[in-house]
Length: 317
Image (cartoon, rainbow, N blue to C red):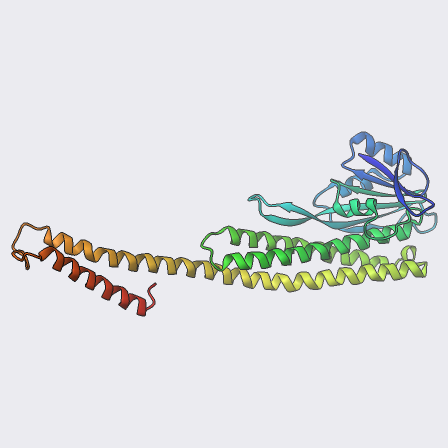
């Protein structure tokens, strides 16, 4: 799928029906015919279009076509995406997004439509100018870094929710949910470090730092990325420790229940023992008494109450 967007004279970004100079070309899971069209239309190698469509592609930057006669540049970065793991628990992953800058347009290429790109289309975050190619690329990078921080805060809130539920839980679902959070943090840590290398390389490239305002915007992107890295490292350590703690809590909760059930079983067995003994066809105490049944019931009740009090004081309940 190929879509075209352009910032109009009034500053509004809108969808356009066909290509215009200075537009943004949003490419989602292109077909082989669309890849051929884009390669010929913008004079870029097919590899530059295919590479971002590989889920395992690492972040990188291609500037060899920028130097003397500017043709195009390629930036591939990892972008966060909300998903579900195989058990249905909340998980965040990353997929590559390619950003190709040409003299006529900016192309973004991804396997699926990303929320960060939808925000840019709807102009929810800030003012975008598709005609200023370098600034627009940096704004996309800033939006990606912002989404890392946004999803990290979402993970933190989800972690606190699980922490409340797990205190009285004996099930494994909360631990599986914590495993999903740990995987998300690992994905984020790997992606953010890769993105950091790309941003550091961009900071030394004249192509992105020629103008002062672009340099300042790039520094903002680098700062956002560093904040996301610091948050990821911190919460990776916290979640790792909490997972071990909660595993022990669940085991302890199970032990408490087993101790309660065992104590309760012992108490219930006392009347059963007395009844079994007096059910024997032999001579037993109180067998000739008129009120034997009542006396035996009272004695059984007293034994049960005493045992219950002893267990209660020993905190078996």
